[in-house]
Image (cartoon, rainbow, N blue to C red):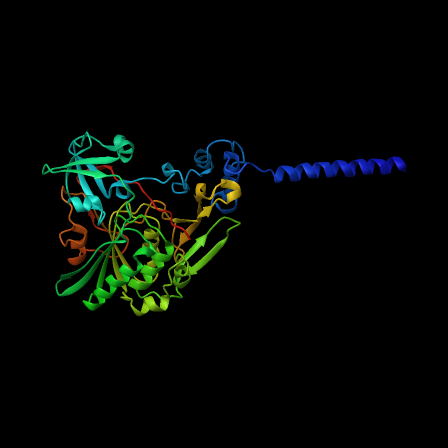
Amino acid sequence: MFKEMKKLIIFFFAGMVLALCSCKKDEESFAPGSNRAINAWIWETMKKQYYWENTLPGRQRIDQDPQSYFMTLLHPQDRFSTILQNQNSETYGYSFENTFGFDFVQYERSGSWTTLVTLVVPGSQADQLGLSRGDTLLRLNNLNLSQPIQPSIPALLRSNVINLTRKDGKSFAIASAIIAQPVIYRHAVLEHDHRKYGYLNISHFDFSGGYALLGAIEGFRANGVSELILDLRHNPGGQVSFSAFCALLFTKVKPADVFVEMRGNRKVGMRQLSFDAALQNQPDGYRFRSADLKAKSLNLSRIFILSSGQTASAAELLINNLKPYIDVRQIGQTTMGKDMGSSSVKSPPEVSGKESYNWVLHPLVYKLYNQQGHGDYSTGISPNTLLDEYASDRIFPFGDPQDPMVRAVLEGKVLRGDAGKRSEGKGRVVYERDFVRAMVF
């Protein structure tokens, strides 16, 4: 009997030792700010929230730099999850638009290359110097633009100054800076056959433009606008709550209508948001209410949306998720295909060490669907009427009635339904911006 009791006591203590070792392993801690601490936090966050959490590898090789480690966790279908660090500008992602205040496209036609300015940020140095959308460029720094520019893009974006030569011989020297973009690039009232159209170009979805947008809509109502042309060709997305803001302000949707259905992993689950619920996720400092927006709304039952391959994220969400409620006429090119939403997770001090060295994760968390359950547009949303903006060597200012997409609306040439008229381009785009804002819930 004594021997049996002795064995039980030995087994009991052996079990206790194993349990303590196990707890010690589970509670393993790393020095704040170390790669191990940061990467362990990344893995734990992804395991809880990431849409493809069931494909994540085990927590291993956590001693490498956080950006590289993060990339090893991403699913092959994931083009959009990101990681940023406050004090590491290399993690932010640069574009000509947010660094020099303009953007351009280069395309090849019959063996020759053409480079056109596609946008100039209002109020930027490029704007003040007289650079305009539609300008043809001959040189960027020491690069002759009669050749493909793609291989030189990273070096150009690291430049302190960009020197441009325009086709008319005028030169520009534009210094790099952090460019704050206005949400509204242009709004105007266009008239055709005694019918008034509001034209509105929104660069991205952000509540910093909320009051300006209210002012633009008030002007449209005062001028008797009965149709809206919403230009999202260069809109990479932004705040989903601002997308709901736009829907309420532009169209006849009701605050209680279902805006979006979000489907996550087995831990996150599924949930629906009404337009009102989505609006209530607006950032601190803003207090817009659905009832107030509806009182000022255009209440349209039809909207014309101009799109391109750079139309992405929350901009695509607006296109897809208005369709159950109103007639959405899309003109231009197929959108980028970001049919998922992200969360935004900041590393705590015990992970990052210093507050100023926080890491921020934007993992893809949800697949997004409209009220009818339609989504899964990872290859983009196709327009009703296909038009190639670069079919000729000339592009027009935003809102110009000569713009082929705007003209198609004014002349009633925009089709309804899935099959659209195609305007074939004669060239091949060899460089165009690749820059997407996270769609954060």
